[in-house]
Structure formats: structure tokens, C-alpha cells
Amino acid sequence: MQLAKLTDINYLIAPDPKRAGLTRAVRGIDQSGQEADISVVEERPLTIFLNRREIVTAMTIGDYPELLALGFLRNQGMLQDDETVTSVDFDEELETVVVRTDTETDYEDKLNRKTRTSGCAVGTVFGDMMEGLADVSLPELQVKTSDLYALSSKINRTPSLYLEAGAIHGTVLCQADQPLVYMEDVGRHNAVDKVAGWMFQTGTSGADKVLYTTGRLTSEMVIKCALMGISALVSRSGFTAWGVEIANQVGLTLVGRMKGKRFVCLSGAERLIMDADLNSIADEPSKSARKGSRA
Image 1 (cartoon, rainbow, N blue to C red):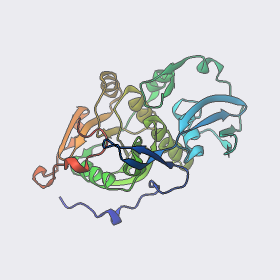
Image 2: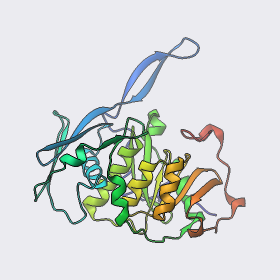
Image 3: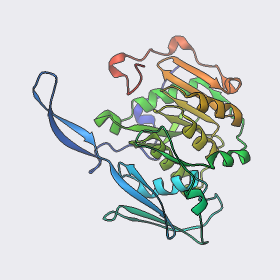
């Protein structure tokens, strides 16, 4: 299989690891007792308001705060696809985003039913998120394994904040073998919410898309993916049992542990088109392995 060169990848949004404010230099000592300067990821609070109501404070790296707010509210069922958003205002000094709609909203009951998740940086979902899945009807998208290998190769060669400083997760919206929107954050839930915010803002359908993540395939990730209308979720990392169970319930194709030529599909295997020539896929060198790939 002939993979495209990195210069042939036309991201709509790509990571900018040199962007000011995302990392800082910190001096420490290494295993030999020698001084070492490294880049570490910044994280800061971001409080999200919907109209006049404070919804949540998230810890984030601080890029794309408007998209994070829109995606979070969309994935919590607080913004519907046909909802009119009149403004999204970010105040950097106050570290707040205010999303305003043309109708009054009241989510006091929903706010009282919060559930902490297992996500890095402590994700938050609301107790009735599962109820939203009852109305989800995912398209039966067929996925070529040749596309999955191409995506994995392209994404893992893309300059990113992870490669710059580590301690970060990435989520990428893809179509066939082309990665489109690549978001990063300290929590995988934040990264996927940024993608959801971009989809909501641009009116982009998830029907023919694949979501790629570097994080674990947990129940929260599966639920968010399904609510975004995306029927295939792929990761370099592993699974949780509940994540697999929900994926099977909603008809979501779930592929994990994708490293080099290896992967495991625990849901939706009948929708995979096994067209890749494994002899042409190289094993991933351990020296170039990303976070979690040696598990």
C-alpha cells in the first residue's frame, strides 16, 4: 500500500505545537542528576456558561475555547442541531466562554445529575446522557482497513503538541483515508468536544466520518462519538467493557490497539472491509512509539 507523504495531508485544522501559551519550559534534573530543561503542557480553567447559567469549569490547554464550549454543550444535549446560537464570547482574562442562544434554557435538573468519569483531567458527563442514545440511529458505514492504516500513519507523523511535550491526548475527525480536524487537550473528552464544536459550528455531518483518538475507548468516548453521528471510532489504546457494550448496542464500529499492522475490532467487525495487504504494512518501531503504544 502506497501511503501519502505528510505534505499531501490537507488538514482543515492541525495542531500548532509552537503556539504561544500551550507549553512552558521547566528546569529539573534527570536520572544522572544533571540539569534538564523540558517543555511541559500548560493547563488552565475554562468556565462555560450557557446564557446566564454557569454549566461547568473544565481544565484545558486553552486553545479553541469557543469550540470546546460548543462541543461540550452539544454532547451534553444542551444544544440541539437546529438550535440558533446567537453568540459565543470568550473572555481570556476571566477565563470564561458564554454561549448565547435565541431561546431561554433551563438545565437545573440536568446539572443536578452529574457523573464523574474515568477520563484524564476528570471528565464530567450528566446522568441522563445515556437517555440521548435512544434516539441515535448511526449509518452503517463500511470502513476499509487500508484507510485505517493510512490514517494511523499520517496522524502519527503529524507534528503535534504530544510530540513536543507529551501529557496530551489527540482526537482527529477523518473521512476515508484523510484526517481533517486534529484537536489536542489534557483530557481526551476535551479533545473530542472541540471536534464536536467544529462540526456544530460548520454544520458538518458525521455520517461518512471516522473518529480517531489516542486515548482509551471508554463509555464516555463511545457515547460522545455516537451523539456526534459518527459510526466508527478508532484508537491506539485499549477498551473498557462498558465502552464495548455500548458500542454494540448503538451499532458503532470500535477498533482499538491499532499500532503498526495490528488492531482489534470488538464491535462492528461486519462493517470492516479487509482490503489491506498486511505484507506492505510496517511494524511500528518502538523508538517512534507514541504514548501508550508499548502497552
